[in-house]
Amino acid sequence: MIVFPKEKPAVENLNSYYLDIQKLFEHYQGEFGSGSIHFKSPSSEGVIFFDKDELLTGVFQDKDGETEGKAVIDCIIEAATDKNFTINIHELDPWEVYFWANIPGAEKIYEDLSTEFTDLEGLIKKMGMEKLTGYIDVSIKNGKEGGLIFLNDGDIIGGSFSWEKGNVNHSKDRQEFLIQKAKESGGIFQVSKISWTKKDTVSEVKETSEKFPSNVLTMLEEFIGIFERIVTCNKKIKTDCSTLLKRKFMEQVDKYDFLDPFVGEFEYSNQKITFLGDASAEELTKGIIESVKELASEIGILPWLMKELEFWFQEHAEELATYDIGF
Image (cartoon, rainbow, N blue to C red; front, top):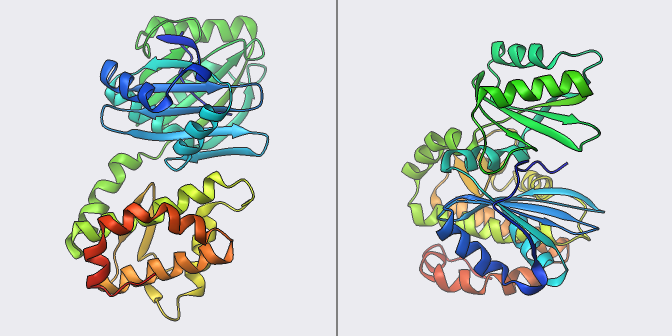
């Protein structure tokens, strides 16, 4: 299930058939600064969260299932260009958009709780005592109404309600109204826990960057990111990109032991590399590029990858030559 703001959109019922999607984002990055764009068609649905500087992450759902992450953004834009989508746009405060952007990766800790056995007010208090960072999703009248209660370290920091207009609402009255509506009409609750990737990776990235020049890390992150985007957009590939990479890295441990997923020296997540091993920048570069090239060949996307890497080759020609990396 895709989770996005429940309020009435600031802009609604646009039609992708008449729009330049890339320019649409550029316009509302300038107009709103941060927000979300929701795409809906009879057979698929997607949402992309953005701030003034970049498109942060996306979620896409169709008959083949649901995928999420930054790599999905291009898939949504491509689908909206080829097919007819209804588009709604929400404006979000800068701090709020990072909360929303982390929701797709949230872990459900309680599912399908009902008012028959669970009191919503009591559930909110319980999550406060457990210091939850996450949200409670409340569905009322079979989804016709509902709301989201956001918590950070157990403190309520806002809510999103289907009967409101505009941004996320911080009013305690609106939260109490949601509790009352759930009591009167009955409701179903889902509780999810969020990991703050934007905050948590700051120290890790700093530690990694001290080991290698920042341009090398950027080059490798871009390289894996391009591969990830191709895998995500290819519906013939049923295994997710993270699993494919871990399997390939396991095959390479005799040559590049720092890639062993169980050792924890190397990690790629949310388009960022964390490396805590002793290998040199040259060894890390060769290990990653060799592994991804082999994997791309095995799953039949190497020609596509090489085509998508054309600009990357030009941008990082100096580093590739330094480490004697050939393609």
